[in-house]
Image (cartoon, rainbow, N blue to C red; front, top):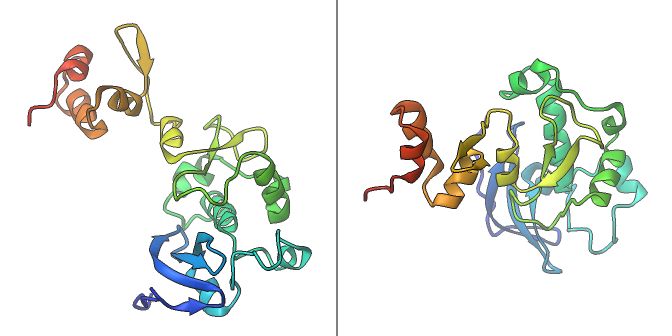
Amino acid sequence: MGKLIDITGKRFGMWTVLNRSYKDETGQWFWSCKCDCGTVRDVCGTSLRSGISKCCGCTRGKLNKHNLKHGGRNERLYAVWQGMRYRCNNPNSKFFDRYGGRGISICEEWNDYAKFREWALKNGYDENAPKGGCTIDRIDNDKGYSPDNCRWVSSKEQCNNRSSNHIIEYNGQSHTLQEWADILGIRKDTLRRRIEAYQWSKQRALSEQVHR
């Protein structure tokens, strides 16, 4: 992998690169870009440099047939779809053991990006949501990706739905560790150490304040 070239401040078509955003599971860097129309969006660096992505779509409205024919690679949603397929189908993914490796698959319908995109736009996907504000989540973690088992939620909501979370009952209330952390104002890692490493009782772990 070559050295990352900083393209902050550069222009590609109608895009002006604001800053580096994140790297997806395939190793592709995404950059926060501002279109001349004012829209801010994360765009794949490869799409910028190759000219695939020249603007947010404001000059042509919604994705047209030509774009669908070529995969819609300039859309953030395309990266979501690609990441989903990578986790389930590619043994080289570092998350494969949690997805494809344990039988999590993608319904046949969603092998077509156009159909996945159509479902996403009709079921709550917000292309203008900040990073982590609109992620695909499986309602039942033991089932695969399909229209009847998926929804769009924030990263925090998705974290609360992970199969690794366990419910903690205390004072007649049942919540995940993250939810207790939010309620009590104590960091999740602190609560986890108290319960798992220090073997504190639930009462002590959830009631004792953090000593600064």
